[in-house]
Length: 108
Image (cartoon, rainbow, N blue to C red; front, side):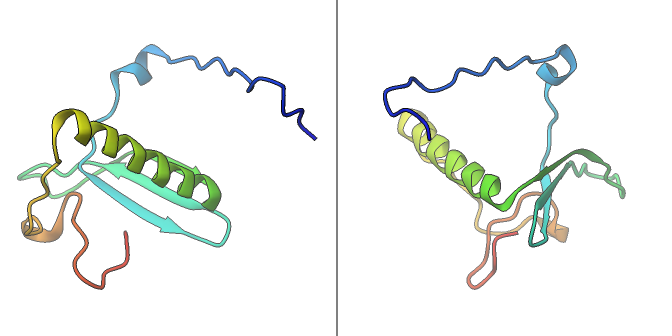
């Protein structure tokens, strides 16, 4: 059992040069099984009929929920500093890109 007086463990995270450049994505496809969530990040460009997955993240359901909570927390902090993030009410033509859920839709 962990000692409650013990400070939290410090983790050193290394960021490689290629990873530091980042990957732009305007489309995420999320699937799941009982054991894992799979998030494929891609981008759809006007006039290009084919999209390629640029990154795939596979994680446990527990970590997916922790990611959801961390994103929610960071969005709230962002909006306190910079104002509300506006989302267009209408989905983009063709249904590409990140889409706001419509009434009754499950989160994708």
